[in-house]
Image (cartoon, rainbow, N blue to C red; front, top):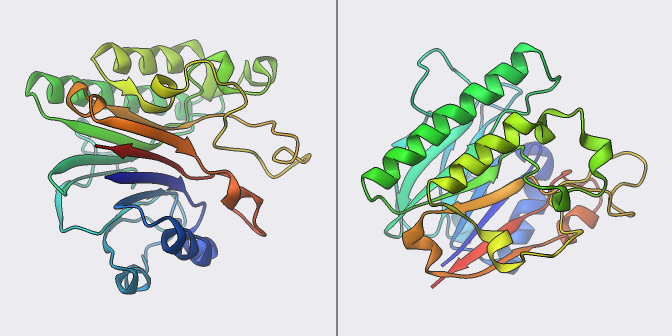
Length: 254
C-alpha cells in the first residue's frame, strides 16, 4: 500500500501538477493540504480511479484525501475545541487502514496568539494519539506538521532559531508524539540522511541551493510501523514551473 502526502499550496493552481503526479506514481492514497478554496475538484480525480473526501475553507487551509478504495469518514475536525473552525483535519478508514490527514498550524510569529494556537493544536493531537494507542487503533498520520524535528532537518539551524517551526515547545510536542509509540517513517529508514527536505521557499533560489526544511511527515503507530517498507521524498514536482513550495513524500506499507 502506497500512501503519499503533499501540501499543494492551492489545488486550483496546482491541479495539473497533482493529476500528472498521480498518473505517473499511482499511489493508493494521496493526502493533500492547503487547498485554499471552498470548492474541491473531486471530478478531476474520478477518471484516474480516485474517490475524494475534503474539508475546505474559503481562501485558507483545507485538507483532502484521495483513495483508490472506498472512504469512510471518521472525523472532519480534531477533537478538543468546538470553536476551532479551521479546515485542518480529516480522519478516514480506507483499504482497512485508519489514515489521518493534518495541516498543523504554522504558529508564527512566536509569542503571538498564532503560536499559542499551534501549541494548543499539538496538545490536542497528542491527546488523541494517546487515545488511539490506549484503544489499540492502528493509525497513520500524514501531512504538513509545520515542525522541524531536529537540526538535521533544516539546511542551517541558525536561520530558524526564531521560527515557530523550530521552537523547543514545538519540537517537544513532536517528541511527545513519538513517545506515545509512533514512528517517524522517514527517519526510521534514513536516520542519518541530511539535506532531505520537503519544503523550500520561493526566494533566493532556495530550491536550487537546497536550503530547505523537512516539515511534511508520516507518523505510524506500532502496528503499522512493522509494515513499513519504504519512505521517500520526491523532489521532482518542486522543480516544475509554478510549483508548490512543498514536494510529495510517500510511504509504502506491506
